Length: 305
Image (cartoon, rainbow, N blue to C red; front, top):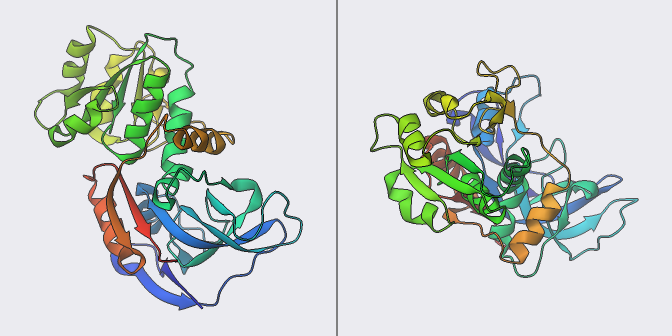
C-alpha cells in the first residue's frame, strides 16, 4: 500500500483527501519510483479547482513533479536501472504527492549527484517553464526583459537564465523579496510599494523593454502590456491561453528543457531556492501556501525514504 493525496471532486481544498491505495505497477515503457520529494505548483490547485477543465474522472491523484529512486522497471525500458535516482513528471493518471508513483521512461532524466532530491523536484515543471519562457524569443545580449513574479520558484530561475544570456533583467516582486531577486543579478521592482508597476518598470528601463515574462497574470499583466512595442513579446506562463485578450504569446514547452535545466543546476550555473518544506502528511498545507500566492521561492513536499 502507498499513501497518496487525491481530490474526490472538483472544487476547493475540502475535496483533498490523504488516502491509502494499492502500490502501482509500471507498464511497458514505465518505471515505479519511490518518491523522495515533490514540487508544488499553482497548477496543482488550479487543476483541483477545475480551472483547466473537469473532463477527467475523480478521484484524481495530485502532484505534477517529483524526484526519487527507481524501484521497479516495466518492459522495454532501456537506460535506467533499479536504484537509479531520477526526476520528472508522473505518468498520465498518476501523481507525485505520494510514497511511490509511476513515471514514463521517456519523460524523466537521471538526477545529478550534486543535487538534493528537494532541489531536483523543483525542475520538471517550474524550472522547465522558466527555461522555455526565457529562451523562447531568442533575445540578443544586452536586451531588456521584465519578469513578473520574479520572487517565486519559476521566476527566480527565469531571472538566472536570462542573466546567463547577458540580458538586463527587471524583476517584479514584493519588497520583502528584494535581496533574493537581486541575488540573481536582476534589478528589483517592488510591486507592493508602487501605485503603477508599468510606469515604474518603464522609468527603470528608460523606455520600452524588449520582452516581458509573466508568472503572475491578472492586473499585473495588464499594467505591463504597454511596456513592449509588440504584444507578442509578452510570454505568458501563469495563464498560457492562446486566445488571451492581449495578443501575448503563450509559453511554448520543449522536450529538451528538462535535461538542459537539470545539467545547469547540477553545474550550479542555476540554483533552486526552496522557501518552504512540508512532509507528505502535510501536503495540504503546502498547497494552501502556494494557493495563497505569496510564497518566496519554491515549495516542496518531502517523503521519507
